[in-house]
Length: 398
Image (cartoon, rainbow, N blue to C red):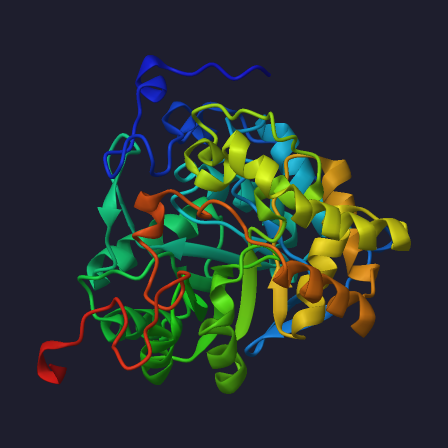
């Protein structure tokens, strides 16, 4: 079925930063326009085994599926039937961790995940996120992690996900107006009510993680992490290791660049977030080509894809790191899942580290407007050490 968008949908834009922040207004919240698709549960023979890892006390597949791309972010959403087929194929291949958020679409990603996984709900981990202020026509107006807003978002997400609980609920971005203790306390209440099972933070630095963890156990931190994006190594990884928290790595393939399939001449449509990223200008992509060549050398020696080396590098870093590559194509999904079988030796890892140390990556990983939302200590060049992070203190603690 070909998707037809209304004039209102085509005109949706985001007011936080119309040119730089989260541009995808032409494709928002389209799931309700399409009829449901029924799927039968797969037989046991269809389901592959994937290694398991722990995010705190939560067990998930060693590689998860990021479910943003099917709905939003790197261009228009794919057809509903194709999206559901891809998500179900991931489950059939052994993926148990599916990552979504209310802002993806907005809302469309959760709807697709909910419909695709309804018949296998008790066999998968559904993760979602709150934290943005989304207007009535889908525009993003800023951040909002006030307790009453968190509750409102969770109730709506439960309906879209067709479930009675969210297995892992993240704060999408640290809110500079709401103490993280109030956020964690609200999620703690939701956990006691059975609506949420585990708590996570996204793009959080060390100070915020510690404060949140004191109020409510944090199971996972979801920060951007890949061979060419190392912001999370200074604070998040050491704190996670100390506190027994898992790390979910988003953008593990460098938003596609590390696969070696994006030429330096590539251009990106306005609904593709990479069109706003300094690292994806023609000049930056050309200057950063050596990191692709570094990965290619290891991949060619092992007879695998660049993407598989990039994912294997992450899983080899720590036993509690879970990459969540997103894709819209089943062949790419299969390649990503097969990365779980790729083993990197100490010599392989050292080759990558030694080679990367000689490189200077050109261009910031996101636009300035997006980077401004990232917590102190989670963004390159910032630190939360000796501070309380981006989240304000409670009045009585000042």
